[in-house]
Image 1 (cartoon, rainbow, N blue to C red):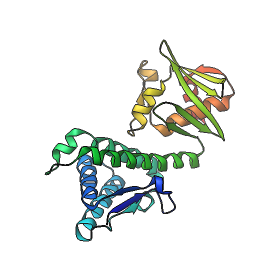
Image 2: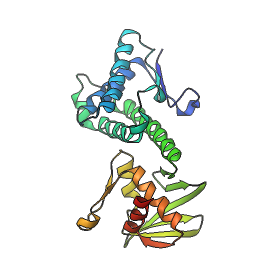
Image 3: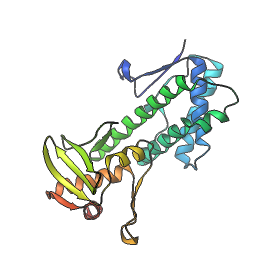
Length: 240
């Protein structure tokens, strides 16, 4: 008998992580060990304590440590930030140095897919929170990045010789954002719960988490303009 981790009780079978009892121990040990590398708020400490509790449950009663993400001690006011924290922890857990800290040998080829699946579940939950906030959500695929806002899907592109981010709806170029980020930068940062940073002088030296970036995209689209500087869009978002 093993354990199952889901987004929620109604999650389809292909969105569930199924692991053995021994695999569960290793999975949780990696997350708990990786969390030591980060400073934590009180809410984030609660999330890691929950994982420690599941580890203890699996030691006492193997096969009963499965859980749904919506059972974890999330707080509505910090959910997006805490989800980003857990994504950073999960990314660190996949690092070889986290495996080296364990007091036993483990098969990375077995555990790594579980960690990646777990990150995808956290990301999905975080995206739902963005949608509820009303500023849309990014879908960070390895081949394509899309942004869903007000029922429309926009594909994000960039050009290697132009510091622009292009938003397409179908084949139509809807908006070009100058001095923006390319999709690869967004995937690298946001998939791990990190921020994207700018360095265009003190007036524009900013950083954006995924929620903040979605706000800027929403402001750019709501402006109705087909061409603008990213930082002007950011000012519109701030004034929203």
